[in-house]
Image 1 (cartoon, rainbow, N blue to C red):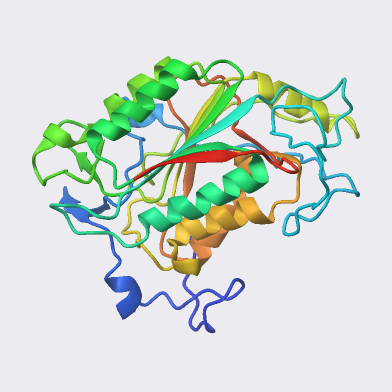
Image 2: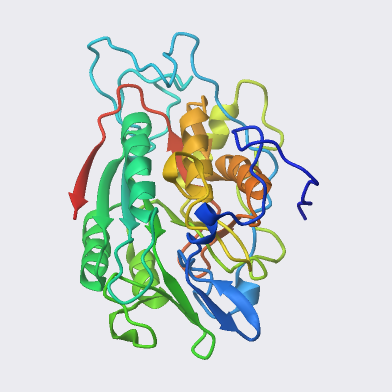
Length: 362
């Protein structure tokens, strides 16, 4: 467990802030509920109560994942090339610094994201950073990874379900989908069910809540190859325990054959979830640029990676360290049981001159 240091310098990328609540961070706490005598963070609900069986949720325990360095001639991420070259998405051909020969290059497919940020609740305490989190993430996904992004801001139940239905109808075997939810959530211990709380949600009235089943029914039916669900706070720390997730391992790969590993990962179906904490309160803010601590770590990791291809497993290691060092929460990463996971991992593919776009539903 991360130990608190006796003293801390001023907050920075390398020096975390003091853990004591401040006026700025204290009022940004998300809603919590007392269940069986414990405080449960209900800020951004995580789908780890999907099947109601604690033993069905197991952690990722992979060895360090190989990565493919970019070609020496590729431009820095912070300074995109200004040359008038044809745009290339992660799944297409064209200029791409991934180290694959044309014959070796896997078909990574097309990349889509559904980003949901709820701040302006009508009957519950309002949040401050959920909208900003997803808007900032959207730019990174489009500019650096060629995602087609759909943003729902202050979404109602109808808009959330409609968006999930559209992806269920439109995505196929070449597609990859990232779902990122930022907003209030609730866990009902009697029903053993978790919920997202849309902006019209009312306390103790489930008519407008979005249940785990509402979402996982869509995930089970999705034709997409890889699906990653991300939630920016959770109470799942004691649930993500088990024998370790089995997946494709790069053991025994010969030098220069890292590409084989990504070939296999690209072919295997993945249904995974990343959470921002365990059984502890999680701040709505407290991060850089007016973002949450977790959103800061998630976005920084995506911005700072120089590998052309990498899995979420590798990304998670960086996120977990940064969040755990800067806040009283430890992120978790697991597969979603019962949704067709087959040992794959959600792959991020850095696209040069990415041609991503977005659709914002205000």
